[in-house]
Image (cartoon, rainbow, N blue to C red):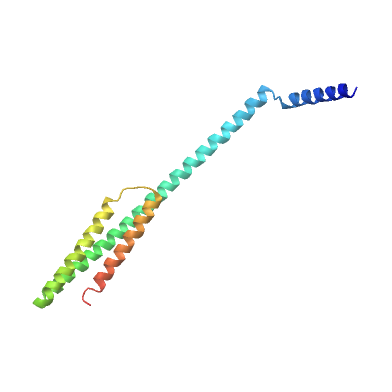
Length: 149
């Protein structure tokens, strides 16, 4: 008897689980449509975020490039002023100053090429390039400031 009751209880449990686990096909279709709509909205949001990020990145690069070009132009003006000043120096100092100024002028030209040759790449490479470029520009500015010292 115990065995029969246990068997009937087990059969009832299995039947209840099967009935409860089954969804109608209409419910399944509605769930799938809802999931699809959510996925489409997520994709749309991601595309908008990507576009905004790209625009911010381009604007940041353009601002950085303009600032760097302004600094390079300022260095070129300073170098030109130094050339005029060196022309008035004594012969023994003139050769030393011209050599130092030629090195600074070459570095300034290299910085200009580095800026113009930069191509878009990953965010990490951009940050690294930007930090390196700013460091080199600061050193070049210090060299110009301390030129006659």
